[in-house]
Image (tube, rainbow, N blue to C red):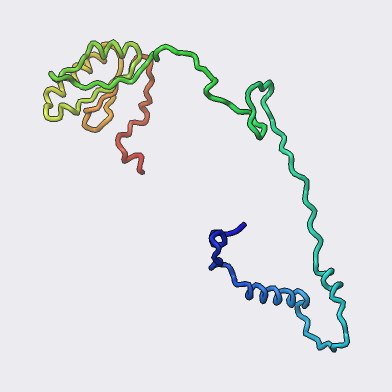
Length: 199
């Protein structure tokens, strides 16, 4: 296979010149004829060395080419679908149809106070009774401590009526988690923030 230089008719600048290739071949043949550790002997011009025998002894026989390895494909039992050119089973994902399911029974709800800084307590209670988990974000009331405490009290009163616990997800108790009915919470590890994760 030729190089780009040969395609345009130029000599390859990285290839060695023909003269150096000839010299290297001559050196190799001289080195191949000499056994390592032997000294050169002076030969009279009348003696003729058997060149053919020395060349035949140095040339090794080519290694036999092994037969090709035949890969046995393992199709699944009862496979009736398409097969790849390699003989493997081809799984066309567009052929699989999933059964249509109804809406999920439970959800994760995110609630923030409205424009009047109030929480929709009754809809939250309804969702908690159905099993939804509600996260209440009071960070919008950052400068209204009185209104923040009022929202916390109403959430606490509603949680006591339902019989659930409220979990604070941050240190300032502005992000609250209310698990729905039949939702189990692991309270053995209550580490907040990234500091415990980095240790």
